[in-house]
Image 1 (cartoon, rainbow, N blue to C red):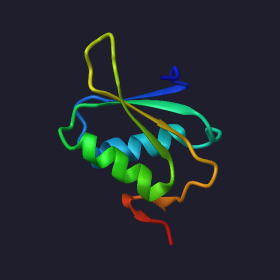
Image 2: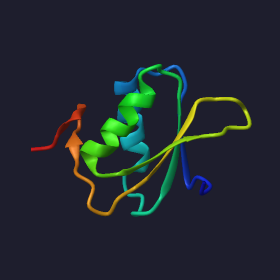
Image 3: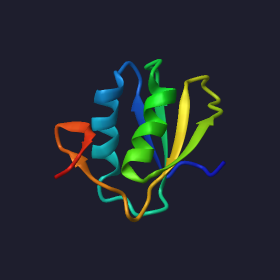
Image 4: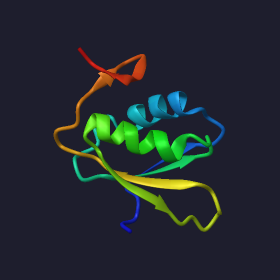
Amino acid sequence: MNPADVTVDGTGLLCVTLLLRLREEIEGAPAGTVVHVVATDPAAPLDLPAWCHMTGHHYLGPVPDPAGRPLYALRLAADARPTRPDAPWHAAT
């Protein structure tokens, strides 16, 4: 697994809030950037790949974390589809 270029700590956040933070922290990052996401919400293993599928980013899956945190990786896509500013589950119009 590639080392992270960006790490987003979503400890204690529900997935909607985590996705808002993730989107904010990757804004302006170039395509190919590897992002590690710490996600403690039990829905994260389903929500992160679904969000990546919807936006066009590449979900790379869970990665081992020396600290034992639930950690997931994704790679940013050049042609990612934007989502609404207030609703990360809805495509921007």
